[in-house]
Amino acid sequence: KFGHKTKVYYHIKDIKYLLHDDLLDKFRAITHQMKKIKRATVRREKDIAEHLEKNMPSYSLNHIIKQRYPSFVDALRDLDDALALLSLFASFPAHNLFDIPKDLIQECQRSTRDFLFYCSHKKCLRKVFLSIKGIYYQVEIMGQSITWLTPYKYTQKLVDDVDYKVMSTFLEFYRVLIKFVNFKLFNSIGLDYPMKDVPLVEDLPLFPMENHLEKINFEGIAGDDYDVEKEFEGDLQQEMEHKKNTKLFDGLVFFMNRETPKFSLEFVIRSFGG
Image (cartoon, rainbow, N blue to C red; front, top):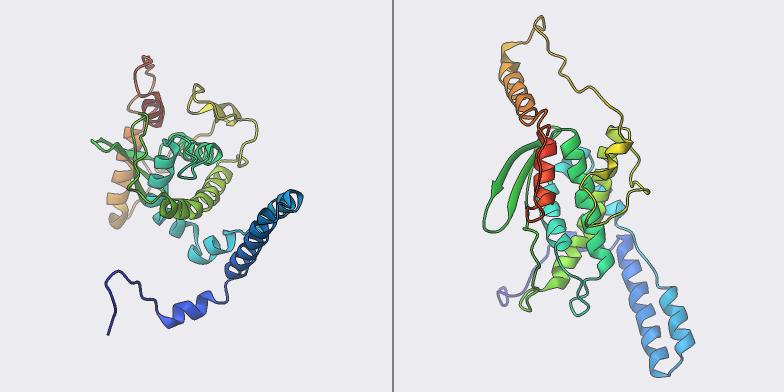
């Protein structure tokens, strides 16, 4: 018989599999180090406590990303929740009580900005929907549709009835995932990642990295004399429709007032050729 409904049960084989993970040894080492710091603090040994904090063991989630996503397409399929959570934390203010530092917010802003830069450069944007919750974006990369929600650029008020520790745990995994994805996407267009000479300033344009790009011709390979089988005619027609939409704002210049959502408008305008 099972106990209370609030309890979570795991399979024995999953627990045995986790026993061989290197992260458990790292977590045990961190717990042991925290006990030493607490003991030194109680004894008022300030120098020893500071030395222990500086030598705190660290861990990496890179091997988990490689195990969970054996191919790049698998990582793209699981990017919806990652972008939604990164966009949410990018709009948060720094908060000491909820353990949301400023560096974490800036990292989320930089990661989402880099991903949007790639999408606008390769004209991956397909749909945009404005709702009460925020702005829904849908892009298509390597045949995979990615849809996520971005909150509006308003000052966010953090409420007390939300467990930010659980959200931060998911965010820790998604931060590593988006770095792998951005690295692969930027290398596909001939750019190094991360780009060191691009600062993160709120008043800076959304895509200051365009100066690093060379002009690349992305015209399609299908011409008038290209023999296409019938089973691929639908895909080719859809691709030509997407290519037509990417030139929706071609040759147009837009002037935005300071009250407009510059971040979102610039992404949409540049994605459609404006």
